Length: 268
Ligand SMILES: Nc1ncnc2c1ncn2[C@@H]1O[C@H](COP(=O)(O)OP(=O)(O)OP(=O)(O)O)[C@@H](O)[C@H]1O
Image (cartoon, protein in one colour):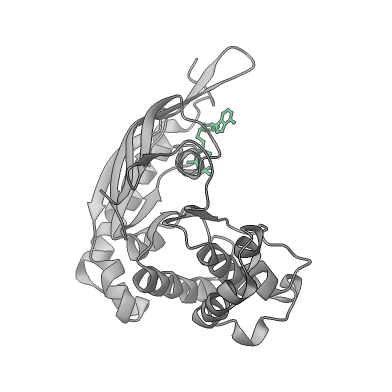
C-alpha cells in the first residue's frame, strides 16, 4: 500500500537522574498517499518527537514505521522537513537554496533547473530568485523553505510549526499556499501546529494528542482543508461547523493544560 503507516510507536527518554519521560506511547496512524494530517496538543505531548521519528532523526523505543511498503530506519530524501525558521542557507541565493537538494544528490543542472524554476513560480518567488535569503521577509523565507523541500520530491512532507513565526496576515496567505501545494503535488503532509484554527483549516485529518504519556486523544476527519483549496480561508472559517469544532478542541486542550499544570517533567 502506498502511504505511511505508524504502528504502535513508543518513545521513552531515559534521564541522567535515572528517571524517564514516556514521550510517546502506542501511537498508531495510517495515512494514505496524499493525506494531510495536522497534529495539535498541549506542550510536551510528543508532537515534535513524533515528527522526528518519522523523519528518521530519532529511533523509537518501540513500534514500526512503514512508508510505501518499506520500513523507515533513518533519514531519507523521501521524507522532507520544513521547520519554523532558521533552516535555510543564509549565504546562498533563493535559487541556490531551492536547488540545494538536487545538487547534493548529484543531479545534472539541466535535469533539475526546470523544476526549480517551476517551484519558484508556484511559491511566488520568481522575481526574488537572485536575492540572498537574509534579504527576504519571514514569509518569503518560509516560501523558500517549502520550495526547497519540494525540490527533493519527497513522498512525505513533515512540517514543524512552519508558520508559527509569521504575522497574522502573512500566516493566512501561507496557509492558502500550503493547501494549494498539497493539492497540486499530491504529497502526504504531517503538520504540527499550536494554532487550533490552523489545524482545522489545514488538516483534512486532525489528531489531538495528550501528554504523559504522549498519545492520541481524539481524531477528526474535517471538510475545511478541501473547501479551502478553492475558497478564501476567511470564508471557510464562517462554515457553521468551524466555530463549534474550534471551541470543542480549545476546551479539550485547555482541560489537558489545566490537568498537567504543576506536574514535574518526568514520570519516575
Ligand atoms: N532528548 C530528550 N530527552 C529527554 N526528554 C525529552 C527529549 N526530547 C523530548 N523530551 C521530552 O519528551 C516530551 C515530549 O516532547 P516534545 O518536544 O515531543 O513535545 P511537543 O508536543 O512537541 O512540545 P511543544 O509543543 O512544547 O513543542 C516532553 O516531556 C519533553 O520534555
